[in-house]
Amino acid sequence: MIGARKVMVAALFALLLAPWSTVDAPGASDVSSFYSRNSTETLIRVYEDPARQEWQKPQEVVDRLSIQPGDVVADIGAGSGYFSTLFAKKVGNGGTVFAVDTDRDMLDYIRQRAKKESLDTIRPLLAKTDDPLLAKDSTDLIFICNTYMFITGRERYLSRLKDILKSDGRLAIVSYNLVDSPEGPPIHTRVSREKTIREVTGTGFVLDAEYYFLPYQHFLVFKKR
Image 1 (cartoon, helix red, strand yellow):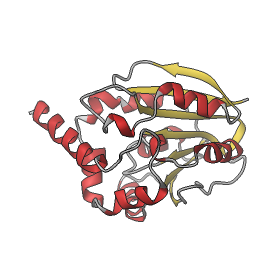
Image 2 (cartoon, one colour; image 1 turned 30 degrees about the vertical axis):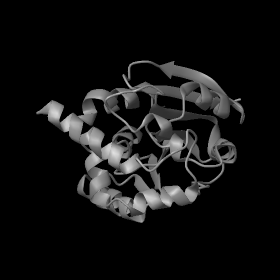
Image 3 (cartoon, rainbow, N blue to C red; image 1 turned 180 degrees about the vertical axis):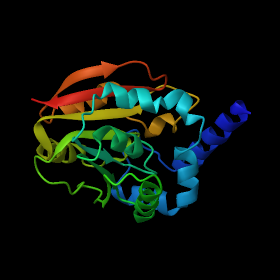
Image 4 (cartoon, helix red, strand yellow; image 1 turned 90 degrees about the vertical axis):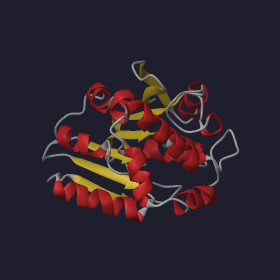
């Protein structure tokens, strides 16, 4: 049964991302087209598939980030709120989790989910493709999971993220390795670990930590230089 589910999820990823044809990130118009071709329900089915727990290891990812009560966390590309809900439990009543996305329907889903799960610290935020629209020096942790490849004009975007972070803030990126894997999108849509590090450090960050427990993804944490 699990094997059949994995095949289904892989097929859905292939369906969702098959139009990409470049090694680097698609253009902003392509991203809009990507979302318009696929229903919110289809995307949520991919993001929330129970089999994802096996390889995404979400709780272990969150635990490694050492989030403290009262922290402000920005989950960029929040999707269905897969990680936002876990962050909300870590920051407690005194913290805030900005669930940032460019898809209104997804944010509506997160809003309903947060209400249902009594997670009042989640703040859905409709962002621009080139700007998360967060205030300067406002955030303790920016988290980007499986979204880095979709960001266009990454140098400018990363510089914006640097401004958003507090002086001791961190940027965490989880993204698929540039090798064939049974989970995740086609290889030609991905950005390699080496390229990610080069781009992020080139905009004034330093690599602070790297974790290796995820089977198909790199997990990098940066601090401001």
